Image (cartoon, rainbow, N blue to C red):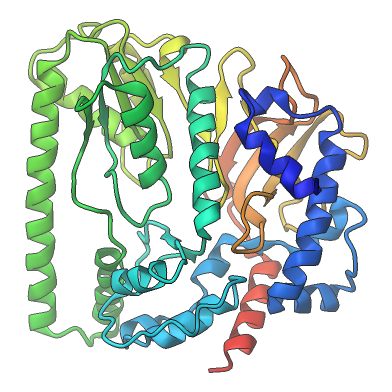
Length: 452
């Protein structure tokens, strides 16, 4: 069995976070070597970067540092490709970042990004997109096998997140996330809440409307046109009308959601929610006369994500805890990013997040140029979070994040891998974020490869 196959087999273990072998570090390094050998022959930009950096073989994890991508590389396409509907050129761009052929997929008649995604999906490319709040989505490819493996990995992450409580399909759930769409978590969320948490028909999602890429892209296009003074009045009016219709639908869906929560408030519930939506529930229920502690004491909150720029009071977390009467065994969280397969569940007993064994943590200095991982695999290190995802096959698994973390490389309480002790975003800290040289380097390779 190859190292990659052995790593993949861990996803099917009863508890992969604890059941990984004692030689996990050596196994991960060998799996990284296999991925490098494989992807260098499939991805020209990996090969070019390796050649320019003088990397012929992965001897240690230090050799990976100069080969890491940044999340912005997955949105490095020229905006004109989307603005002008040049979907064949978008496929040409995508080809630089994925190992399976995409440029032969016909793009005749494609009108927007969602139709482009559907056309590629029909050819076996299970792309997912970032939220695109900036108006420019990231697009990352997956093979059908990647999707199947990822679904199980997320399932294991959710189960580990809930531990020691075990979901028994015994409670109504309210999930502030659509069950379908371009976001990577749509499918895994729907799978978990409908198959593990709630009885049939009792898993409620905030909207049945699929999460699409095009609306966010259109918003970004209009912002750029307004800034350039080229936006036409009819274009602005059409966008505003579309936005108003969408907002009315969502407001109605949320109002109905809140009605159902209110009607079920005396039953044990489960919420799949981010902080802003959790605080919205608190405010809405308080406005209806529900006092702190009035919700059923066995209600659980499964949290995720940050505040996404939403303005909340400084004590919003304390208010949420107080309203729901939350204790640690009823509040779940995780550390994750869409570019990473699965979740690092929060363990309250350790005050840390457990990294799954198929993720190789790489702690870098702030510039992203030096690996800080301890050579003996012991002790705590503070720095920029990077990783190598060993489950993804469609694209290169190495990624640098914008997170400042403390990683404890001493496993604890039976966990096989390192633990993340603290997390912050560089852009939210006083020291701020720096531009990473590696991001521009990979982008230049992409521009050279598409040659447009």
